[in-house]
Image (cartoon, rainbow, N blue to C red; front, side, top):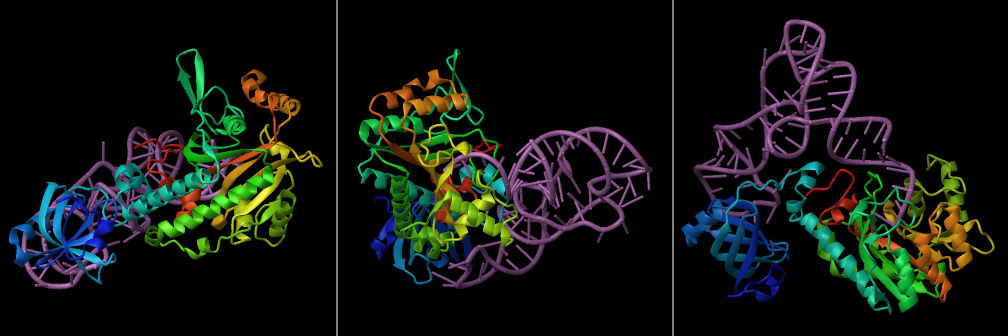
Length: 436
RNA sequence: UGGCAGGUAACUCAGUUGGUAGAGUGCCCGACUGUUAAUCGGGUUGUCGCGGGUUCAAGUCCCGCCCUGUCAGCCA
């Protein structure tokens, strides 16, 4: 008999099936043993009644949490079950009986769970978060694939920094050369956009920032679209459409997981077009009003970059993600296009997620003038020879173009409604955390 | 990198004015025909983060270090 998966049991009511998986939890009551079995697709309760088969009962009663088991039984409807069905066990094969599984159904601390991350991902909530991550990734890829974008991944080893070397991980590259792990595929995306018109990269990104916050990882995944003949406003349109498609997909495909996580889905359901678009000037005014009302501790001044409390304040003023554009050029990268009428403003855009999840998109319009970029490289003290290939993009058919990057983990944390991004990736890499 | 909180059993924690170590959970044994973190009875577990100091005596007080969490800076 072939294997049936728990999420398909509803189609097999009354039939005998074989489930292959692990013991999630066990309870017994007199002559009954209840095996909570998981197989990766769900959890189902398997019931063994002692008078029916005493040897089977003794075996079922003896296995410990996370023992690997193959269960044969009859599927029956049961209103007491959260998935509507149960299994009456007729046979049980124990591949390995284990008794020292460290993670119990009771409470544990963060450090212990992180040390046991390789096992923790079997737990219901972690499983649900990672399923949501999967759906976020799938929604993102479908969105770009269905909108004329070509996937053109960028290298992970890079020869130089795009904004200084302090936040880069250095790698020895055959002795003489040094390589760095990429912190963004953006410069390369600008090249692929000139080849394909609309391109995107999706992959891991590395930042050696010594940040210890609930929003930071040293290794995280980012999706970065880049579009030729597009401006910063087009990126707000594109980002908004992408976010809406992610929210919709998560709400459609991951209802069960959202329920497991006790996520308040009404805040996700309330997200619709259009997202508010704030000029940096107006954002500054709002922050200053917030300070005047005593809702912010520090008075924000024009020219600065938003701190976490500022971002939270701006995003909680609306029930939706909020775009901010026209950041001061002085706090942005060398490659940004600036507003012709206000050269002190870069055509950068950020998207702030609601509920204090912070910046999930950062991007904008790129400078298309060769002369301006050469000037900017000097101004930022960057070696021009390293960027010659990048400047070629302005020598040969330069066009206005724009793009952005979205962090998969921050987006997933927001969708799942969880506190810390470390739970949104199977094996997080953080300052002081390289294991398991 | 800085502020704050913390490090005691496998896990989560308690430990009084300094007097020689506790609970719950897990695990093992037993009871129970419907359990949902099952319940009930019995049993089992210690480098009190590390090093130094004060003291007759330190988990407890003092100094240094290490580690963890959290907030902030930076960013996605």
